[in-house]
Amino acid sequence: MHVRAGKSRFNLQTLPAEDYPRMAQADNEQARLQLTQKQFKRLIGLVQYAMAQQDIRYYLNGLLLVVTGKEIRAVATDGHRLAYASENLSESFSRTEVILPRKTILELSRLLSDNDEALDIRLSPNQAVFRFGSIELVSKLIDGKFPDYERVIPQNHTKVITLSRATLLQSLHRAAILTNEKFRGIRIVLAPGSLKIISSNADQEEAQEELEIAYDDEALDIGFNVTYLLDVLNNVSNEEVEVKLADANSSALITLPGNDRFKYVVMPMRI
Amino acid sequence: MPQQLTLDIRPEQHPTLENFIAGANAELVARLRALAQPKAYDAVYLWGPPGCGRSHLLRATRAAADSAGRRVVLVAGEEAGAELPCPPGGLLIVDDIDRLDGTAQVALFRAFNSARLAGLALLLAGAAPPLELKLREDLRSRIGQALVYQVQPLSDEEKAATLHSQASQRGLRVENGVIGYMLRHTSRDLPSLMAVLDALDRASLERKRPVSVPMLKEMLSHFNKKPDAR
Image 1 (spheres, rainbow over the protein chains, first blue to last red):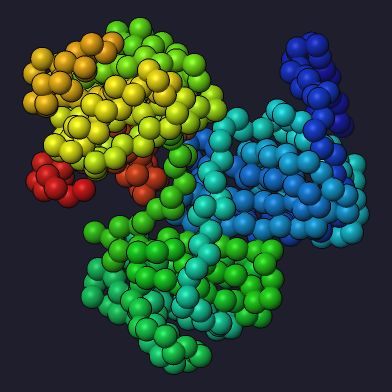
Image 2 (image 1 turned 180 degrees about the vertical axis):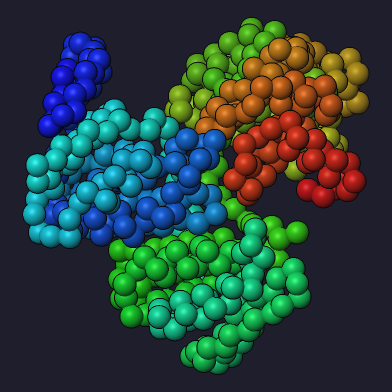
């Protein structure tokens, strides 16, 4: 190939076009669904931060997409926390599950726009095709058994607190400054009427934040990796969040008040 | 050191006859598969030292009978009382028969006698061959007339294969050398090896690290310091 521009000349090597790898399009389609770009972008945005990055369990380095009845669900987990979100569909489908690779999800969330234009998704047993605007993105799927997310989402946590998302986020941000850089542990100390966030680092520096809350159940002292709490608060947009707890060794469930379409489960850290 | 707890995301694994690495026990496994079918009326006794896979085989046979539509009851020796459930046409499984108390031994003897009539199949397991069982003489001789199998221990290669297949069922890629190290440096019966694999699985999820020989070494030194830590 020759390229000339003004007084520059380039002579480049080429390879035969037949050698370019071609992706065989799957012909055994299981489901074809339509959403708006905005809907799907929001759906994956609510969970993608919980995907594992380089786990040896390859199925964790991806996002589970479940189509069932008139619903589409997205689930991601790295074994420490799990995020779940769902969205309504206009038609009903028989149950189909696929695991999309982490890279596909990151590309999609970058490429999708925040508008009402159509996104066409086709799922087959080993391939997913996304069509939107002038883009067609074909992705292979991760072969594997995704964890049973329903077993992991707690049902009977009795200690319930409702918090302003922005206030909690800011307090956690400040407390996070004085956590150990490697473990990022903070303590949440719950007592009637009060929630304290306590952190300390290796230099014996300490931070304490206190929030007033409506709570009159037993006291609880529980540790978390602050990153996992910041992640969820940064990726939802509600005014308020609901936190449900049981004891210091059980997961915390974070939901949005009056909305059962989003759930975030995070395991504590023993500090 | 802070410890991140992990979500319970490990796949549930039920013992089946398919996921039992048979090794030299192929005939026994085939026999159990047949025994789970509705019209088999044999009495089978299998024995072997703890950790040889007896309990796995009993539970797997129960599952196989269940899915074949045969009524099946599994009783643990120390929990058996004066009455043993004997569903007609069904399969009665009794584990640890060396722990049956006096009345339970009578009940089992009666089950033996009525088995033919009731179309009942029996599957029993214990730690010793019939001759060495410390039971009532009449019961012991009945057991001696059953089809007796010794559960053969797995060779090291078969144990390694079992561990590899267990690891891959969990989606766990185990670095080379880990399983060899486990076989050389830990207790080599399968339940202990599985417990080590389980602990490695948890540790790797907890720390987001691959399963490696250094991780295994660190874990074993921890085990040895406080042997009852689990």
